[in-house]
Amino acid sequence: MKYQSQSVAKLYFIAAIALFAAQILFGLIMGLQYVVGDFLFPEIPFNVARMVHTNALIVWMLMAFMGAAYYLVPEEAETELFAPWLATLMFWIFLVAAGLTVAGYLLVPYSTLADLTMNELLPTMGREFLEQPTITKIGIVIVALAFLFNIGMTILKGRKTVVNLVLMMGLTGLAVFFLFAFYNPVNLVLDKFFWWWVVHLWVEGVWELILGSILAFVLIKTTGVDREVIEKWLYIIIAMVLITGIIGTGHHFYWIGTPEYWQWWGSIFSAMEPIPFFMMTVFAFNMVNKRRREHPNKAAVLWALGTAVMAFLGAGVWGFLHTLSPVNYYTHGTQITAAHGHMAFYGAYVMINLTMISYAMPLLRGRNAANPAKSQILEMWSFWLMTISMVFITLFLTGAGILQAYLQRMGDNPLPFMAVQDKIELFYWLREVAGLVFLVGLVIYIASFFVGQDEPEAVVAD
Image (cartoon, rainbow, N blue to C red; front, top):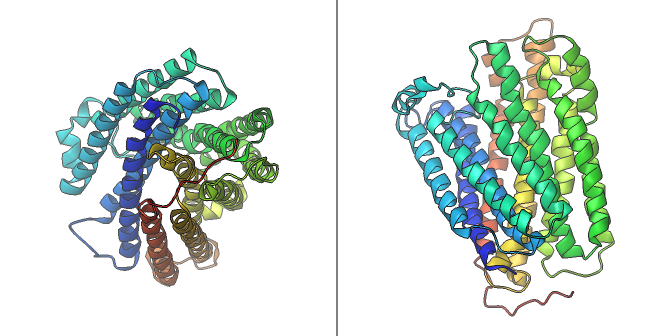
């Protein structure tokens, strides 16, 4: 750690990992409720488990992105963070708001929560992924604005780098597109049209800029490859992300009542969306092959390479599988969507955040370069357990989705929804087993930070 103010990132990283663990636990509860319908009912109904699972994901992603920015930006800008106290204050506000929101989901009925938070003054609740009470959404906006101010002022007073500017562009887009969460028109087509401006333009747009800049930063630090080479790659990747991702929003507009031309626009540009992810894979492996030094943090390098591969598979390949409108006509809203969602989120965003935490946490804890060998071996075990189990979760959900689409939507005598669910129950059980293995991997990942800390320091070569 070069700058004292980078230490605020540690708070964000610790909270992010704790929320990650909560997300996985609620995912396992949901997975079991798929096959044992009254599991934990009425204490934790399925809709509540699902809200906590998805909302915990969003909050811990944002926490980790903020932590990454608070670590990365001062180092790139070669100056202390503009206002470390503001970063700490916003962390506690964000954490308390997130905690109270989850407690609200778990302890009171959702309609009561809407009444308690005076949702009728500005109705925004009740939409998938945007279930947060309006008061929480306002809190998120305040935290995001303070965060952007802090990061922006740090960049302004320090060195300007491509990594910092791409990151700033992504974070600004994240904040701007979240504002559409406050727009809740009565017309359902209009509502869904703009709802995707938050959900799609986050995960298939501006978040990819954040992913690209963090990956570039870690590769600069661990490979010693010239910054200019990495920056050129980053420019090309983000250009492709924006070209394909923005118009690719159209693949969500196929069946919601929008004009037919979206089937062409959505299909053509969505078919191009795997390109930037493939470029990211080539970029990461190229940089590691060209490295001019062996960095002692081998776990961070493994996470970086894993991010590139899994993001390409999950967001690229599995996205393409069902993104063309003639295919999507049959697969829309089936478990194929869930398969793509799980592997894409894990590959692109979970793994890049774990890459950054893996690289930064040893330095934040006072080590020269990396965790000790015992710790890194455990961390690499966690990498393989989580990654392989996510591949199996994806394959099981894909199998369930293909069978679901065939039995429910394609046969001469299509079966009712619940009859089909009974027939694909085996896939749900297998998914649950893979989810338990994933949890074991996460526990090992957390344990790796507490192992072998008394071993001698590794020294990084310049």
